[in-house]
Picture (cartoon, helix red, strand yellow):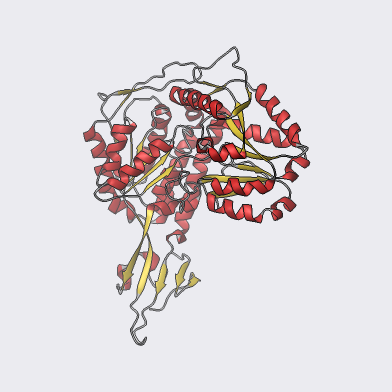
Length: 530
Protein backbone atom coordinates (compact mmCIF):
# COMPACT_ATOMS: atom_id res chain seq x y z
CA UNK A 1 0.00 0.00 0.00
CA UNK A 2 1.61 3.28 -1.14
CA UNK A 3 1.69 6.17 1.31
CA UNK A 4 0.49 9.57 0.07
CA UNK A 5 1.19 12.07 2.88
CA UNK A 6 -2.42 13.27 2.90
CA UNK A 7 -5.05 13.59 5.60
CA UNK A 8 -8.40 11.75 5.54
CA UNK A 9 -11.37 14.12 5.43
CA UNK A 10 -14.16 11.61 5.65
CA UNK A 11 -14.01 9.70 2.38
CA UNK A 12 -11.75 12.25 0.68
CA UNK A 13 -8.04 13.08 0.97
CA UNK A 14 -6.57 16.39 2.04
CA UNK A 15 -4.42 18.77 0.03
CA UNK A 16 -0.62 18.57 -0.05
CA UNK A 17 0.13 22.24 0.50
CA UNK A 18 0.28 22.54 4.30
CA UNK A 19 3.24 22.78 6.67
CA UNK A 20 5.39 19.64 6.29
CA UNK A 21 5.56 16.81 8.85
CA UNK A 22 8.14 14.06 8.41
CA UNK A 23 8.83 11.05 10.59
CA UNK A 24 12.36 10.33 11.84
CA UNK A 25 13.78 6.88 12.45
CA UNK A 26 14.85 7.24 16.11
CA UNK A 27 17.51 4.54 15.76
CA UNK A 28 19.33 6.05 12.77
CA UNK A 29 18.12 9.65 12.53
CA UNK A 30 17.00 9.02 8.93
CA UNK A 31 14.05 11.07 7.68
CA UNK A 32 11.29 8.86 6.34
CA UNK A 33 9.24 9.51 3.22
CA UNK A 34 6.67 10.66 2.43
CA UNK A 35 6.43 14.18 3.77
CA UNK A 36 2.99 14.76 5.31
CA UNK A 37 1.01 17.93 4.79
CA UNK A 38 -0.65 19.68 7.72
CA UNK A 39 -4.31 20.45 7.17
CA UNK A 40 -5.55 23.97 6.73
CA UNK A 41 -8.01 25.48 9.17
CA UNK A 42 -10.72 25.02 6.56
CA UNK A 43 -9.89 21.32 6.18
CA UNK A 44 -9.95 20.75 9.95
CA UNK A 45 -13.33 22.47 10.09
CA UNK A 46 -14.57 20.34 7.18
CA UNK A 47 -13.64 17.14 9.02
CA UNK A 48 -15.63 18.24 12.07
CA UNK A 49 -18.57 19.34 9.93
CA UNK A 50 -18.64 15.91 8.26
CA UNK A 51 -18.61 14.24 11.69
CA UNK A 52 -21.50 16.40 12.88
CA UNK A 53 -23.50 15.56 9.76
CA UNK A 54 -22.80 11.86 10.25
CA UNK A 55 -23.72 11.83 13.94
CA UNK A 56 -27.56 11.58 13.74
CA UNK A 57 -27.32 8.63 11.35
CA UNK A 58 -24.48 6.87 13.16
CA UNK A 59 -25.98 7.43 16.63
CA UNK A 60 -29.14 5.65 15.45
CA UNK A 61 -27.20 2.76 13.89
CA UNK A 62 -27.92 -0.58 15.53
CA UNK A 63 -25.43 -2.30 17.80
CA UNK A 64 -25.11 -5.11 15.28
CA UNK A 65 -24.19 -2.66 12.53
CA UNK A 66 -21.66 -0.87 14.74
CA UNK A 67 -20.22 -4.26 15.65
CA UNK A 68 -19.90 -5.12 11.96
CA UNK A 69 -17.96 -1.86 11.40
CA UNK A 70 -15.55 -2.63 14.23
CA UNK A 71 -15.02 -6.16 12.96
CA UNK A 72 -14.44 -4.78 9.46
CA UNK A 73 -11.74 -2.46 10.77
CA UNK A 74 -10.10 -5.34 12.63
CA UNK A 75 -10.12 -7.52 9.50
CA UNK A 76 -8.59 -4.70 7.47
CA UNK A 77 -5.75 -4.29 9.98
CA UNK A 78 -5.14 -8.03 10.11
CA UNK A 79 -4.75 -8.04 6.34
CA UNK A 80 -1.88 -5.53 6.48
CA UNK A 81 -0.30 -6.62 9.79
CA UNK A 82 3.26 -7.17 8.42
CA UNK A 83 3.32 -3.83 6.60
CA UNK A 84 1.86 -2.05 9.63
CA UNK A 85 4.46 -3.48 11.99
CA UNK A 86 7.32 -2.75 9.61
CA UNK A 87 6.34 0.89 9.12
CA UNK A 88 5.79 1.34 12.86
CA UNK A 89 9.22 -0.17 13.48
CA UNK A 90 10.84 2.38 11.17
CA UNK A 91 9.01 5.27 12.82
CA UNK A 92 9.44 4.22 16.48
CA UNK A 93 12.40 1.76 16.62
CA UNK A 94 10.17 -0.48 18.75
CA UNK A 95 10.96 -4.17 18.11
CA UNK A 96 8.95 -5.99 15.48
CA UNK A 97 7.64 -8.71 17.86
CA UNK A 98 6.27 -6.01 20.16
CA UNK A 99 4.60 -4.25 17.22
CA UNK A 100 3.11 -7.43 15.77
CA UNK A 101 1.65 -8.05 19.20
CA UNK A 102 0.34 -4.50 19.30
CA UNK A 103 -1.53 -5.04 16.03
CA UNK A 104 -3.14 -8.11 17.57
CA UNK A 105 -4.01 -6.17 20.71
CA UNK A 106 -5.58 -3.44 18.58
CA UNK A 107 -7.71 -5.83 16.54
CA UNK A 108 -8.59 -7.78 19.67
CA UNK A 109 -9.99 -4.73 21.42
CA UNK A 110 -11.95 -3.77 18.30
CA UNK A 111 -13.57 -7.20 18.35
CA UNK A 112 -14.16 -6.98 22.11
CA UNK A 113 -16.12 -3.75 21.63
CA UNK A 114 -17.95 -5.31 18.70
CA UNK A 115 -19.17 -8.08 21.00
CA UNK A 116 -20.18 -5.52 23.62
CA UNK A 117 -22.38 -3.44 21.32
CA UNK A 118 -23.79 -6.45 19.48
CA UNK A 119 -25.08 -7.79 22.80
CA UNK A 120 -26.30 -4.30 23.71
CA UNK A 121 -26.75 -4.28 27.49
CA UNK A 122 -23.96 -1.71 27.93
CA UNK A 123 -26.56 1.08 27.44
CA UNK A 124 -27.82 0.47 31.01
CA UNK A 125 -31.51 0.60 30.07
CA UNK A 126 -33.78 1.34 33.05
CA UNK A 127 -37.55 1.20 33.10
CA UNK A 128 -39.80 2.44 35.90
CA UNK A 129 -43.40 1.75 34.74
CA UNK A 130 -46.03 4.41 35.46
CA UNK A 131 -47.93 4.15 38.74
CA UNK A 132 -51.06 6.27 38.10
CA UNK A 133 -52.76 5.08 41.29
CA UNK A 134 -49.86 5.91 43.60
CA UNK A 135 -50.72 8.29 46.46
CA UNK A 136 -50.22 11.07 47.18
CA UNK A 137 -48.68 11.57 43.72
CA UNK A 138 -48.80 9.35 40.65
CA UNK A 139 -45.48 8.22 39.18
CA UNK A 140 -44.93 8.93 35.50
CA UNK A 141 -43.57 6.26 33.18
CA UNK A 142 -39.78 6.68 33.06
CA UNK A 143 -37.33 5.02 30.71
CA UNK A 144 -33.64 5.91 30.46
CA UNK A 145 -30.49 4.71 28.73
CA UNK A 146 -27.04 5.86 27.67
CA UNK A 147 -26.85 7.73 24.37
CA UNK A 148 -23.73 8.84 22.41
CA UNK A 149 -22.29 12.34 23.00
CA UNK A 150 -21.42 13.38 19.44
CA UNK A 151 -18.19 13.94 17.47
CA UNK A 152 -15.06 12.97 19.42
CA UNK A 153 -11.47 14.14 18.81
CA UNK A 154 -8.78 11.54 19.59
CA UNK A 155 -5.13 12.55 19.91
CA UNK A 156 -2.77 9.76 18.88
CA UNK A 157 -0.16 8.72 21.46
CA UNK A 158 3.59 8.62 20.83
CA UNK A 159 4.36 5.42 22.72
CA UNK A 160 1.69 3.13 21.25
CA UNK A 161 1.54 3.77 17.47
CA UNK A 162 -1.34 1.29 17.15
CA UNK A 163 -3.09 0.45 20.43
CA UNK A 164 -3.47 4.10 21.55
CA UNK A 165 -3.55 5.82 18.19
CA UNK A 166 -5.67 5.85 15.03
CA UNK A 167 -7.53 2.58 15.68
CA UNK A 168 -6.71 2.30 19.37
CA UNK A 169 -8.87 1.98 22.43
CA UNK A 170 -10.20 5.54 22.34
CA UNK A 171 -11.30 5.19 18.71
CA UNK A 172 -12.77 1.72 19.27
CA UNK A 173 -14.79 2.77 22.33
CA UNK A 174 -16.00 6.03 20.78
CA UNK A 175 -17.14 4.28 17.59
CA UNK A 176 -18.77 1.56 19.68
CA UNK A 177 -20.71 4.21 21.60
CA UNK A 178 -22.02 5.70 18.34
CA UNK A 179 -19.72 8.74 18.11
CA UNK A 180 -17.96 9.80 14.89
CA UNK A 181 -14.21 10.18 15.41
CA UNK A 182 -11.67 12.73 14.18
CA UNK A 183 -8.10 11.58 14.81
CA UNK A 184 -5.32 14.10 15.31
CA UNK A 185 -2.46 11.85 14.15
CA UNK A 186 0.77 11.90 16.13
CA UNK A 187 3.61 13.43 14.13
CA UNK A 188 6.06 10.72 15.23
CA UNK A 189 4.35 7.94 13.28
CA UNK A 190 2.37 9.49 10.41
CA UNK A 191 2.90 6.60 8.00
CA UNK A 192 1.59 4.05 10.48
CA UNK A 193 -1.43 6.27 11.01
CA UNK A 194 -2.08 6.53 7.27
CA UNK A 195 -2.04 2.75 6.86
CA UNK A 196 -4.49 2.35 9.73
CA UNK A 197 -6.73 5.16 8.49
CA UNK A 198 -6.92 3.60 5.04
CA UNK A 199 -8.29 0.41 6.58
CA UNK A 200 -10.80 2.32 8.72
CA UNK A 201 -11.98 4.48 5.82
CA UNK A 202 -12.54 1.36 3.71
CA UNK A 203 -14.48 -0.33 6.52
CA UNK A 204 -16.74 2.72 6.88
CA UNK A 205 -17.44 2.69 3.15
CA UNK A 206 -18.04 -1.08 3.11
CA UNK A 207 -20.54 -0.68 5.96
CA UNK A 208 -22.50 1.91 3.97
CA UNK A 209 -22.11 4.49 6.74
CA UNK A 210 -21.73 8.27 6.30
CA UNK A 211 -18.16 9.23 5.38
CA UNK A 212 -17.93 11.60 8.36
CA UNK A 213 -17.93 8.68 10.80
CA UNK A 214 -14.11 8.78 10.56
CA UNK A 215 -11.46 11.34 9.66
CA UNK A 216 -7.72 11.53 10.36
CA UNK A 217 -5.77 14.73 10.01
CA UNK A 218 -2.14 15.82 10.30
CA UNK A 219 -1.00 19.05 11.86
CA UNK A 220 0.63 20.66 14.87
CA UNK A 221 -0.66 19.88 18.33
CA UNK A 222 -0.89 23.55 19.23
CA UNK A 223 -2.61 24.91 16.12
CA UNK A 224 -4.50 22.00 14.60
CA UNK A 225 -5.13 20.23 17.89
CA UNK A 226 -6.21 23.44 19.58
CA UNK A 227 -8.62 24.27 16.77
CA UNK A 228 -10.23 20.85 17.09
CA UNK A 229 -10.67 21.13 20.86
CA UNK A 230 -12.23 24.58 20.53
CA UNK A 231 -14.54 23.64 17.65
CA UNK A 232 -18.15 24.11 18.83
CA UNK A 233 -19.35 20.87 17.18
CA UNK A 234 -16.81 18.66 18.99
CA UNK A 235 -18.35 17.04 22.07
CA UNK A 236 -15.42 15.23 23.74
CA UNK A 237 -11.63 14.91 23.53
CA UNK A 238 -9.18 12.15 24.49
CA UNK A 239 -5.43 12.47 24.95
CA UNK A 240 -2.53 10.31 26.15
CA UNK A 241 0.75 12.09 26.79
CA UNK A 242 2.55 14.57 29.00
CA UNK A 243 1.05 16.39 31.97
CA UNK A 244 1.77 19.81 30.48
CA UNK A 245 0.09 19.06 27.13
CA UNK A 246 -2.81 17.24 28.77
CA UNK A 247 -3.44 20.06 31.20
CA UNK A 248 -3.40 22.57 28.33
CA UNK A 249 -6.10 20.57 26.54
CA UNK A 250 -8.14 20.22 29.75
CA UNK A 251 -8.05 23.98 30.33
CA UNK A 252 -8.91 24.66 26.70
CA UNK A 253 -11.91 22.34 26.80
CA UNK A 254 -13.12 23.87 30.07
CA UNK A 255 -12.72 27.43 28.77
CA UNK A 256 -15.04 26.95 25.79
CA UNK A 257 -18.35 28.84 25.89
CA UNK A 258 -19.87 25.37 26.16
CA UNK A 259 -17.32 23.23 28.04
CA UNK A 260 -16.83 19.61 27.03
CA UNK A 261 -15.22 16.61 28.74
CA UNK A 262 -11.52 16.14 28.04
CA UNK A 263 -10.32 12.66 29.00
CA UNK A 264 -6.57 12.88 29.45
CA UNK A 265 -4.07 10.29 30.63
CA UNK A 266 -0.99 12.16 31.75
CA UNK A 267 1.49 11.54 34.57
CA UNK A 268 1.94 8.53 36.85
CA UNK A 269 4.86 7.25 38.92
CA UNK A 270 3.13 3.92 39.66
CA UNK A 271 4.63 3.28 43.11
CA UNK A 272 5.83 -0.18 44.11
CA UNK A 273 5.87 -1.13 47.80
CA UNK A 274 8.27 -3.98 48.56
CA UNK A 275 7.04 -5.73 51.69
CA UNK A 276 9.37 -7.88 53.86
CA UNK A 277 8.22 -11.23 52.50
CA UNK A 278 9.14 -10.33 48.93
CA UNK A 279 12.87 -10.07 49.63
CA UNK A 280 12.85 -13.02 52.01
CA UNK A 281 11.59 -15.25 49.21
CA UNK A 282 14.39 -14.27 46.82
CA UNK A 283 16.11 -10.97 46.10
CA UNK A 284 17.31 -11.75 42.56
CA UNK A 285 13.83 -12.47 41.21
CA UNK A 286 12.44 -9.20 42.59
CA UNK A 287 15.38 -7.23 41.18
CA UNK A 288 15.03 -8.87 37.76
CA UNK A 289 11.28 -8.31 37.67
CA UNK A 290 11.64 -4.66 38.61
CA UNK A 291 14.41 -4.07 36.08
CA UNK A 292 12.40 -5.72 33.31
CA UNK A 293 9.39 -3.56 34.17
CA UNK A 294 11.00 -0.12 34.33
CA UNK A 295 13.05 -0.72 31.17
CA UNK A 296 10.25 -2.35 29.13
CA UNK A 297 9.76 -0.32 25.97
CA UNK A 298 12.74 1.81 27.09
CA UNK A 299 10.69 2.95 30.07
CA UNK A 300 8.12 4.63 27.82
CA UNK A 301 5.05 2.91 29.25
CA UNK A 302 2.56 5.01 31.20
CA UNK A 303 2.55 2.18 33.78
CA UNK A 304 6.34 2.12 34.28
CA UNK A 305 7.19 1.70 37.99
CA UNK A 306 8.97 4.99 38.68
CA UNK A 307 8.88 4.98 42.50
CA UNK A 308 9.99 1.95 44.52
CA UNK A 309 9.75 1.91 48.32
CA UNK A 310 12.16 -0.51 49.95
CA UNK A 311 12.46 -1.49 53.64
CA UNK A 312 15.65 -1.74 55.65
CA UNK A 313 16.11 -5.47 56.31
CA UNK A 314 18.96 -8.00 55.99
CA UNK A 315 18.08 -8.94 52.41
CA UNK A 316 17.96 -5.36 51.11
CA UNK A 317 21.69 -5.14 50.32
CA UNK A 318 21.59 -8.20 48.08
CA UNK A 319 18.51 -6.85 46.26
CA UNK A 320 20.22 -3.50 45.60
CA UNK A 321 23.42 -5.18 44.46
CA UNK A 322 21.56 -7.33 41.93
CA UNK A 323 19.49 -4.41 40.63
CA UNK A 324 22.62 -2.26 40.23
CA UNK A 325 24.34 -5.10 38.38
CA UNK A 326 21.44 -5.37 35.92
CA UNK A 327 21.47 -1.63 35.27
CA UNK A 328 25.27 -1.48 34.89
CA UNK A 329 25.13 -4.25 32.28
CA UNK A 330 22.25 -2.78 30.28
CA UNK A 331 22.81 -1.67 26.70
CA UNK A 332 21.75 1.80 25.51
CA UNK A 333 18.07 2.19 24.74
CA UNK A 334 16.42 3.99 21.82
CA UNK A 335 13.68 6.45 22.72
CA UNK A 336 10.76 7.24 20.45
CA UNK A 337 11.58 10.78 19.33
CA UNK A 338 14.38 13.36 19.56
CA UNK A 339 12.15 15.46 21.85
CA UNK A 340 11.59 12.55 24.25
CA UNK A 341 15.36 11.82 24.28
CA UNK A 342 16.11 15.48 24.99
CA UNK A 343 13.55 15.60 27.81
CA UNK A 344 14.86 12.37 29.34
CA UNK A 345 18.43 13.69 29.41
CA UNK A 346 17.27 16.95 30.98
CA UNK A 347 14.96 15.38 33.56
CA UNK A 348 17.39 12.64 34.62
CA UNK A 349 20.19 15.20 34.99
CA UNK A 350 17.96 17.28 37.23
CA UNK A 351 17.00 14.17 39.21
CA UNK A 352 20.71 13.49 39.79
CA UNK A 353 20.96 16.80 41.66
CA UNK A 354 18.02 15.82 43.89
CA UNK A 355 18.86 12.17 44.64
CA UNK A 356 21.89 9.92 44.62
CA UNK A 357 22.63 8.08 41.39
CA UNK A 358 22.68 4.47 42.55
CA UNK A 359 23.62 2.98 39.18
CA UNK A 360 23.48 3.73 35.49
CA UNK A 361 24.19 1.91 32.26
CA UNK A 362 27.35 2.74 30.30
CA UNK A 363 27.05 4.97 27.25
CA UNK A 364 28.07 2.19 24.85
CA UNK A 365 29.89 2.37 21.54
CA UNK A 366 26.92 2.31 19.15
CA UNK A 367 24.68 5.14 20.25
CA UNK A 368 21.22 5.45 18.63
CA UNK A 369 19.98 8.78 17.33
CA UNK A 370 17.56 9.06 20.28
CA UNK A 371 19.59 7.49 23.10
CA UNK A 372 18.91 6.75 26.75
CA UNK A 373 20.76 4.92 29.49
CA UNK A 374 19.01 2.95 32.20
CA UNK A 375 19.36 4.62 35.60
CA UNK A 376 18.31 4.10 39.19
CA UNK A 377 18.28 6.89 41.73
CA UNK A 378 18.09 6.58 45.51
CA UNK A 379 16.85 8.74 48.36
CA UNK A 380 15.41 8.35 51.83
CA UNK A 381 11.80 8.86 52.82
CA UNK A 382 12.34 12.20 54.54
CA UNK A 383 14.00 13.68 51.45
CA UNK A 384 11.29 12.19 49.24
CA UNK A 385 8.61 13.88 51.33
CA UNK A 386 10.52 17.20 51.41
CA UNK A 387 11.04 17.25 47.64
CA UNK A 388 7.75 16.75 45.75
CA UNK A 389 9.59 16.88 42.41
CA UNK A 390 11.06 13.46 43.16
CA UNK A 391 7.62 11.92 42.67
CA UNK A 392 7.25 13.36 39.16
CA UNK A 393 7.30 10.97 36.22
CA UNK A 394 10.37 10.75 34.02
CA UNK A 395 9.57 9.24 30.63
CA UNK A 396 12.38 6.75 30.05
CA UNK A 397 14.27 3.78 31.57
CA UNK A 398 14.78 4.99 35.14
CA UNK A 399 13.32 4.44 38.58
CA UNK A 400 13.67 6.02 42.04
CA UNK A 401 14.37 3.90 45.12
CA UNK A 402 13.02 5.34 48.36
CA UNK A 403 14.57 3.82 51.48
CA UNK A 404 12.26 3.40 54.47
CA UNK A 405 13.36 2.40 57.96
CA UNK A 406 10.46 -0.03 58.17
CA UNK A 407 7.25 -0.92 56.30
CA UNK A 408 5.41 1.17 58.93
CA UNK A 409 6.83 4.24 57.17
CA UNK A 410 4.99 3.21 54.02
CA UNK A 411 1.88 4.85 55.43
CA UNK A 412 3.64 8.24 55.48
CA UNK A 413 4.70 7.75 51.89
CA UNK A 414 1.28 6.57 50.73
CA UNK A 415 -0.51 9.55 52.29
CA UNK A 416 1.84 11.92 50.41
CA UNK A 417 1.25 10.39 46.97
CA UNK A 418 -0.70 12.14 44.22
CA UNK A 419 -2.93 10.15 41.89
CA UNK A 420 -1.45 7.23 39.93
CA UNK A 421 -2.59 4.69 37.39
CA UNK A 422 -1.29 1.80 39.46
CA UNK A 423 0.08 0.91 42.89
CA UNK A 424 1.90 -2.39 43.44
CA UNK A 425 2.56 -4.47 46.55
CA UNK A 426 5.16 -7.24 46.51
CA UNK A 427 5.25 -9.73 49.37
CA UNK A 428 3.51 -12.66 51.00
CA UNK A 429 -0.16 -13.06 51.79
CA UNK A 430 0.79 -12.50 55.44
CA UNK A 431 2.40 -9.19 54.43
CA UNK A 432 -0.77 -8.20 52.64
CA UNK A 433 -2.94 -9.02 55.63
CA UNK A 434 -0.62 -6.99 57.88
CA UNK A 435 -0.89 -3.90 55.66
CA UNK A 436 -4.63 -3.43 55.30
CA UNK A 437 -4.35 0.27 56.14
CA UNK A 438 -1.77 0.75 53.38
CA UNK A 439 -4.04 -1.02 50.90
CA UNK A 440 -6.95 1.24 51.87
CA UNK A 441 -4.84 4.36 51.29
CA UNK A 442 -3.58 3.10 47.92
CA UNK A 443 -7.12 2.34 46.79
CA UNK A 444 -7.75 6.10 47.09
CA UNK A 445 -4.57 6.96 45.20
CA UNK A 446 -4.61 4.62 42.18
CA UNK A 447 -6.97 3.08 39.66
CA UNK A 448 -5.43 -0.41 39.78
CA UNK A 449 -3.81 -2.21 42.73
CA UNK A 450 -1.46 -5.09 41.90
CA UNK A 451 -0.23 -7.86 44.18
CA UNK A 452 2.92 -9.79 43.27
CA UNK A 453 3.12 -8.58 39.70
CA UNK A 454 4.44 -5.57 37.87
CA UNK A 455 2.23 -2.84 36.40
CA UNK A 456 3.49 -2.69 32.82
CA UNK A 457 1.03 -5.32 31.55
CA UNK A 458 -2.45 -3.89 30.88
CA UNK A 459 -5.03 -6.50 29.91
CA UNK A 460 -7.81 -5.36 27.56
CA UNK A 461 -10.87 -6.83 29.25
CA UNK A 462 -14.18 -6.05 30.92
CA UNK A 463 -12.77 -5.57 34.43
CA UNK A 464 -9.60 -3.61 33.63
CA UNK A 465 -9.23 -0.08 35.00
CA UNK A 466 -6.61 2.12 33.33
CA UNK A 467 -7.21 5.42 35.03
CA UNK A 468 -6.68 7.11 38.35
CA UNK A 469 -6.93 10.36 40.29
CA UNK A 470 -5.30 13.53 38.91
CA UNK A 471 -2.63 13.93 37.61
CA UNK A 472 -2.78 10.35 36.33
CA UNK A 473 -5.95 11.25 34.45
CA UNK A 474 -8.37 14.14 34.16
CA UNK A 475 -11.27 12.17 35.64
CA UNK A 476 -10.77 9.20 37.96
CA UNK A 477 -14.31 7.96 37.32
CA UNK A 478 -13.31 6.55 33.95
CA UNK A 479 -10.88 4.10 32.34
CA UNK A 480 -9.24 4.32 28.91
CA UNK A 481 -8.75 0.54 28.59
CA UNK A 482 -11.42 -2.16 28.71
CA UNK A 483 -15.09 -2.15 27.82
CA UNK A 484 -15.98 0.27 30.64
CA UNK A 485 -14.15 2.98 28.66
CA UNK A 486 -17.21 3.28 26.40
CA UNK A 487 -18.94 5.24 29.16
CA UNK A 488 -16.70 8.26 28.46
CA UNK A 489 -18.62 8.85 25.25
CA UNK A 490 -22.22 8.46 26.40
CA UNK A 491 -24.69 10.32 28.59
CA UNK A 492 -27.96 9.22 30.20
CA UNK A 493 -31.21 10.33 28.55
CA UNK A 494 -34.65 9.80 30.13
CA UNK A 495 -37.95 9.49 28.21
CA UNK A 496 -40.97 10.34 30.38
CA UNK A 497 -44.50 9.21 29.41
CA UNK A 498 -43.44 8.46 25.81
CA UNK A 499 -45.55 6.12 23.67
CA UNK A 500 -43.85 2.75 23.42
CA UNK A 501 -43.24 2.79 19.63
CA UNK A 502 -41.44 6.15 19.88
CA UNK A 503 -38.70 5.18 22.34
CA UNK A 504 -35.47 3.42 21.26
CA UNK A 505 -35.68 -0.35 20.83
CA UNK A 506 -33.60 -0.80 23.99
CA UNK A 507 -36.45 0.72 26.02
CA UNK A 508 -39.47 -0.77 24.31
CA UNK A 509 -41.76 -2.94 26.41
CA UNK A 510 -41.24 -6.09 24.36
CA UNK A 511 -37.43 -5.85 24.72
CA UNK A 512 -36.89 -6.76 21.04
CA UNK A 513 -33.10 -6.76 21.49
CA UNK A 514 -33.19 -9.13 24.46
CA UNK A 515 -30.81 -6.99 26.51
CA UNK A 516 -30.46 -6.95 30.27
CA UNK A 517 -32.44 -4.03 31.73
CA UNK A 518 -33.23 -2.70 35.21
CA UNK A 519 -37.02 -2.87 35.54
CA UNK A 520 -38.27 -1.21 38.72
CA UNK A 521 -34.80 -1.83 40.14
CA UNK A 522 -34.68 -5.54 39.23
CA UNK A 523 -32.36 -6.86 36.45
CA UNK A 524 -34.39 -8.61 33.75
CA UNK A 525 -34.36 -9.61 30.10
CA UNK A 526 -38.10 -10.22 30.08
CA UNK A 527 -40.73 -8.06 28.30
CA UNK A 528 -42.41 -5.42 30.42
CA UNK A 529 -46.13 -4.84 30.85
CA UNK A 530 -46.78 -1.11 30.67
